[in-house]
Length: 220
Ligand SMILES: [Fe+2]
Ligand SMILES: [Fe+2]
Image (cartoon, rainbow, N blue to C red; front, side):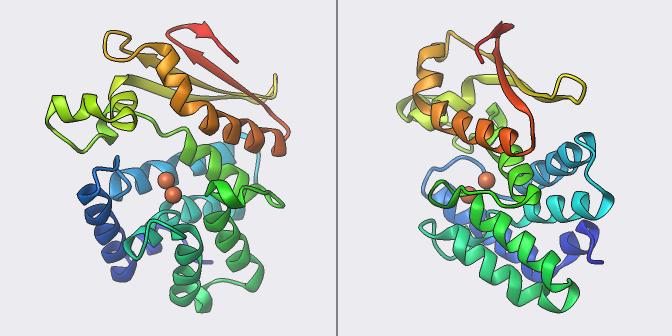
């Protein structure tokens, strides 16, 4: 079966991720390039493993995590659909029909308008993606510009984060440390409530409760 290691070496994939990164950076979005892709891939594999999915599902989840945003190189709008179709064009010959369709679904399902789960690969990919908030995702260097945009401001405020999985308690918890001098917790909520709803929906599909802890306060 196709592995993440092979996907990471594919020149088309690497070019598309690189172009997506440039395109998003030009629009002052947070990191949607290689760092984000690699982090989501690694996190998806960890989540899949920790909740007890088999090695095939772990591999498929990490591949979906790595490729979920590369459709942005064509267009931000519909990047999830475009990404899934591009993935199919590159890898149709290397995956069985079912494996291919699960990864394609996961790429499509990671965006809010399609967030409907019928398979665990999609739910794991969404958890890995939507939990990626961190200072290093901010690509702008100018602190004034960071402060003027709420998405950048809120990501910049997150100085540490961790997605923890408690299999016994059936709980997946995102713990964040937020610099409240930079952004008040309420502002974090304004921006991330939607994301947290997606995480909760994905966790629920996997049979887990989703928890959110900010600065050691349990909020969910
Ligand atoms: Fe995306
Ligand atoms: Fe993403």
